[in-house]
Length: 208
Image 1 (cartoon, rainbow, N blue to C red):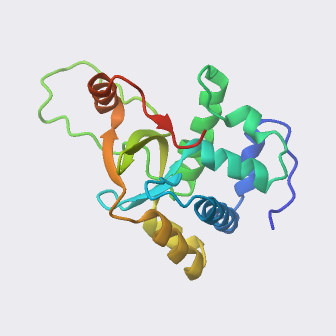
Image 2: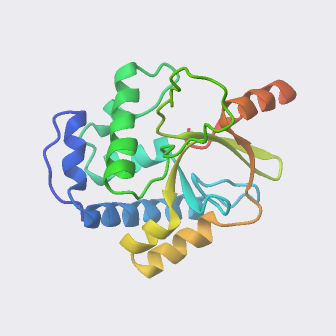
């Protein structure tokens, strides 16, 4: 059960994760929701909103699925209104997402690995300052058969997730998300733009 906390606005989201135990109990809830979604979809080419990346050793959780789960977990107190990404997303929503994912889940707890911590400048012939753009998700395209879905992916470290959830929950997550049929065909904006150009359309979001 989620702990009771008072939500007045986006900055209160920090009190929802006052310890690593809070992250673990929430992730176990998210895994349960994920399992329900999988049980309701029997299509051979179905793509769940969480997929595993062997290369990064992360579970890529679609950001909007994460927010849906977080809002439901806390009895729909208004989190979704402040954090959900839409086609006409506001600067404040982007700032809120940055705070939740990059500041709390990545910087503070280290369960997410989305920030670029090192930069090799040995090949860069410049004396100008180098800007490292902040982000709180990666654009991914995952394909299963003919089906392709777009993720705003929050990369949760598999090793850190394993530390905070029960073994049976972790095994269930791995069983759902770690399948050879899920092929990553897009990573980042350049590959996304190329895919759209080649296919003449945009892939549908994995979370409607």
